[in-house]
Image 1 (cartoon, helix red, strand yellow):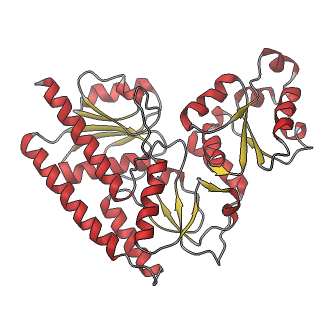
Image 2: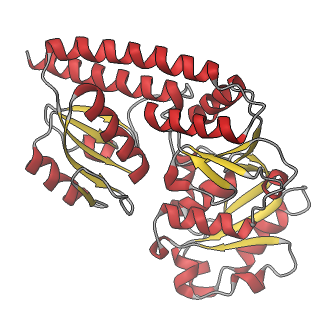
Image 3: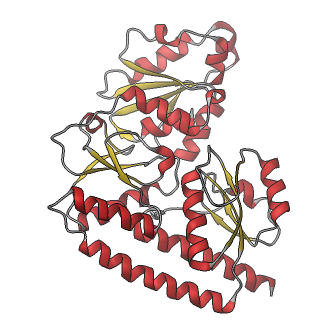
Length: 364
């Protein structure tokens, strides 16, 4: 349900209604920080049916110029209500996406498929893919990739999923991914943007696909900033041993974190706990979706650094921690910081080194 809401609420021109209880509304609202609407069904609607409540909410929103999307949650799905027939007098996009039907990526893909994105052969540039409101770094990723594409004189197509609704039918023929866990599958995939090596390959490919582009400025900044990152990491390693690391995150971000730390600070990547289906990796990897399993792996591998969410942070004693995946509680996040692009790698290394140094100094 949250994945479906993250997809649809990212488009300007869609009004999203969560059909369920108050808890089903407040959970995605808290994580996505997006304007959602809810039916807030209670015991009476569970017993006597929720049609009146649903049509009341949708009726109030109809006629305001935006497409309405209704996302069902567990209770209406278990009751077996024919929500589609309840709303037949309204032009509504219906997404049957209760929590038990899959993970956040499943809901995201299901909602996106109902929007039927299409490539416009006349559209210029490259789409920015993998932008999901659930991802705490999505705003920074969009800004960073927009900056680099503009620097290379490559037009920006549709941003999936953070754009105007009408642009979904006029996507560019080519696509560049940020968080690959949320790929749209629209356009020809030209590469990813997580990590210096990956970014370099992607821009080299785009240089071939876009003859009018000038990737030289991006390549120059890549060399310059990677040299600075290596200098800072070498300085860290002169003072401290490489950390043992356990990572809990989606497969795309977890892989980026592991590759980056192994390359630049010789980190011992002891385990990756993927929240979704993991990709092929040279690191020891497994699916971890429960706090009990996370606790088991933290105890087993005894890392110096844990990367994950507030859930994993609650398990730690004196290990260093960096937040990478929701929920991230107990801290204020205002600036649109990225993980993608050049600044994403710089930010990530900066956060890791500061967390490790603060922890070591505290122990001393």
